[in-house]
Image (cartoon, rainbow, N blue to C red; front, side, top):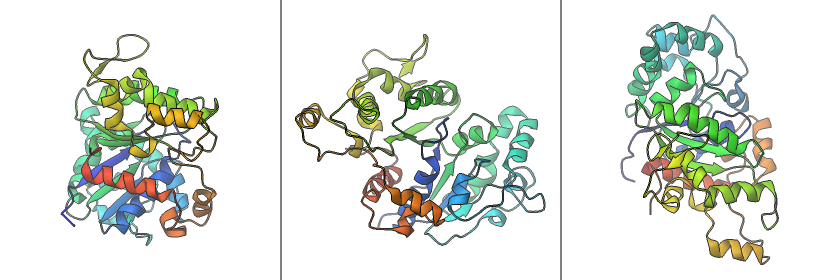
Length: 317
């Protein structure tokens, strides 16, 4: 196996409930099983990722936490745990206070803390990949995550608010951060699909938007190859919608015109996207990633594709 290019990745979706935590621990397990050194970090004060790995404490002023690393020169190794699933882990601890403390610092400097004090120290030295689960609303921890891990994976679920969540992420985070830093969206993934797509369902609506909609493509390119001057962004002249979608939608979620025709003609074998599996929830209740709970689950094939994307730094033809 060739030496990996070290890469930090953030699940930087400004919307909760889209499966970021489960995606983070599952991808961490897949990358770890490939022989990589992987660190997964929970930056969400709600701590869903931490709970899913058996770490329940949210507040403990006596313990060394992320704030001590970012603001008080503590060694990052002091806050890293080893849950034993192929990756190391930083659980959520005192994160509301950490966010408040970061907000008191100089604005630009405080957004660089995670990069300077943790990512630059560990990435390429101790870890090949660092994955950050982030809160669902913009705060200083999110700012630090996208600066320190400027490669994003954005999970979406088939819900009425899905595209609005992407719109808010694009407008309030992606476009903003690209004014100062290089920021790549490695992949946008449809997650927890369960309905038929030969009928007008939320699953179909989401997949159609992801595979055909110029506005969806413009969300992904906001601040780079798309401008936001009205209520919605628009791709710059000459930017091809299909090219943008091919660069951001994994093969397991791309649907061609011919495949749509097959689906509409009754072929139900085509099931794009990450499908609902009760074992994701079962694994969470057992405080394990799915890779440990059932390494034979068929949905893990899609996470192998995501691992390829992380290793390669984007889609490969």
